[in-house]
Length: 294
Image 1 (tube, one colour):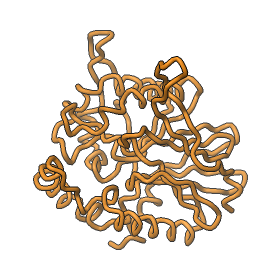
Image 2 (cartoon, rainbow, N blue to C red):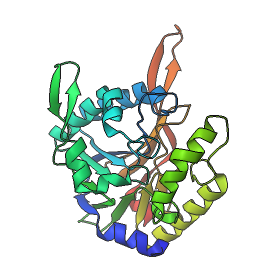
Image 3 (cartoon, rainbow, N blue to C red):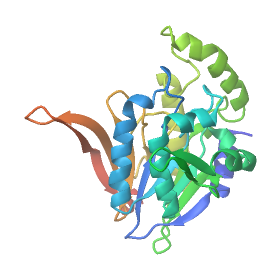
């Protein structure tokens, strides 16, 4: 199956959600929640992630996790990930309880597409506050993509992880997982980057982004993905946006869709004049109305 076929299949099997002028969506990708050890890249940004999600929860946003939420290539145990990131799963459970949580799987958590995996690991989590098991998202379904459909104007925004552009990370994901788990992860610990990763190899990153941009133009829709960890906003001539990731040393990035406007934001730690630290939300680049893409 080629790239075009993989993208079309993901689009065809996507969940359809409405896009109204009153809709509020926040899209975050590539959290890569791990087991709390030295290789857990999410760990150093988890406080920023929690602050961002509390902000969006209080303001009525629907949270969409756009793949690679959990690092299941480097780690075998989902229970270990849940144990080490209880606060994150607690706030995700709050979004789920309000029916404001939707999840897309990526290549690093592609096993979530299997219903047996969903039922086994996501029915509950242990809450430290209540000292008991609480519902997590027991009936959650993980999708290859989500389509936000403006039924009034007919616009469509396609949300998918973006690994479909890479044969090694889609069709041959089991081979990639083996290489990451047993070869590249140990080598990265001594400073050798993974050449198969679109996030760590600039040549592969640009190739992936070029493919995704071309597909969006050909299909006359807006495409928002993650995978490359390279945050960007699109335009009419290049209707491709990227959420970035939660594992960058400088902070986390997200795409907000509110009042039919797409905004790329960065959450980071900053310092006030009195030298106290605070969590800041900064707009990156220019905001773009959905209308401007068509």
